[in-house]
Image (tube, rainbow, N blue to C red; front, side, top):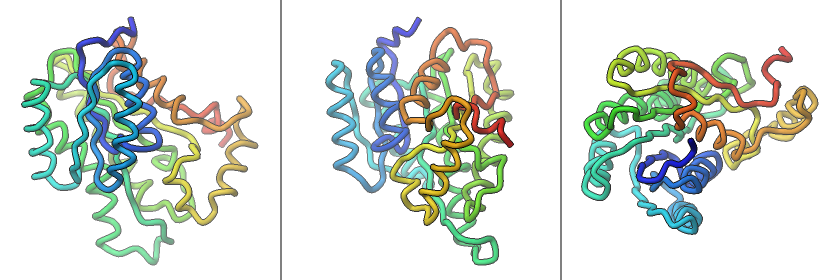
Amino acid sequence: MFNMRGRVALITGGSRGIGRAIAIRLAEHGMDIVVNYVRHRQDAQDTAAEVEKYGQRCLIIKANVAKENDVKAMFAIIAEEFGGVDVLVSNAASGVLKPVLELTERHWNWAMDINARALLSLVQFGLPLMKKNARVIAVSSLGSIRAIRNYTTVGASKAALESLVRHLAVELGPRGIRVNTVSAGAVDTDALKKFPNRDEILENALSRTPLGRLTTPEDVADVTLFLCSNLADMIQGQVVTVDGGYAIMG
């Protein structure tokens, strides 16, 4: 049921953190991988090396998913190299960490374009390459439903992302394409290091997590693997939260 041999997965922002963990986990179960990155080429190469340890192909593509021309060009390369794509993981994310009253139009548009609108472009350009039973998975965070200090643009964009997933699920369901969201709790990645109150966030999350430990990138990758499998055939348009119970603590 977790034998994914012969399938191809594209992971945006796949060079580090959660994206890397997903790429490695899917490769471990037989998928060929496309790692998209925009800045950290060495990290992308390191991820590719880990993927190839499982005997799978790994294609590295530099592309800014906020730019439609980059997305279009990326899928042209994928079509030439693999002929199609079975799994699309929209993981690339960015944003500005500032108080609400300090935000500008540019800050807002930056987060929305990368974190939410990119999924729309990825689906629109990727759909011709997707086979029946393909999977689209968006990676979100608890900031989509909770107020987190300085997280306004990212949180709002993640909420938009989750709404987009629901609408895509309705439209793509008749084509046999499953569309869902994986929402991660507090995960100690490079992205979290940009938070000035990183230590406070991690300590608070740990103290309020019933299972007694923080969520890891591998935890998120495991749920992503499940959503790619036939065991998840009847899960559509849902947000699956991976946080050890943190969100239920209020």
